[in-house]
Length: 257
Image 1 (cartoon, rainbow, N blue to C red):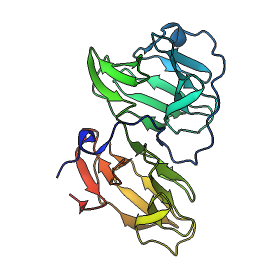
Image 2: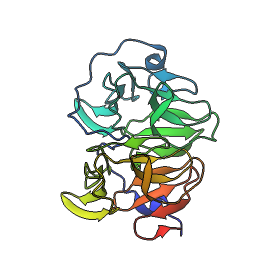
Image 3: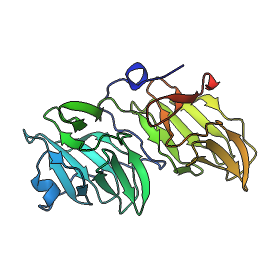
Image 4: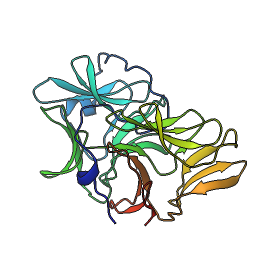
């Protein structure tokens, strides 16, 4: 069974959780220095980077995409945030890689990515509707309006950290008792059954397997050994391990595919 973004990810203007940290309030956008990326106005070209304090603007001037000093990439309408990468890691930057992937990261670590690699020449465009879009030519590969919350390859959830669906309804949280639990608002909807292991962590490993681990011992996993996987917490409440080509390998309803 395959799962696609079109089937599960409802369009939304809410901020999204792309990394595993608790979400503080958004900071208001500050004045941006004029840089090469900012001078490009609404476009971040292949190989260009938005560093802390830099921004893109929509052609009509109503929207701004800000790389904040707190590590979060945010789309603003005026002073109101309408989308976020939820990457609160100070010192992070946003790079439109030459392989087509938009990445927010720091020092080689990726805290958010659009999974659009393999499309050389793709670029990031901030449109007049406030949508941040990765395009190749006139083809849209990714949009902030259709995206879902992710845990990228190689990222670990530590106790109390969480991934939040873009509509803010679902929260996948690493509990301090060792359980990885999904909540619908504040009601428990699913869990891994790994409680009783204090300070356990959950990692979307680089070998493609999502693993709950404590003291070096694996307590639970999705058994999805595949390169370039990532975890999605979708607006419909499903939790899915995808490949980079959007093939579902595991989901919370059906397990391993």
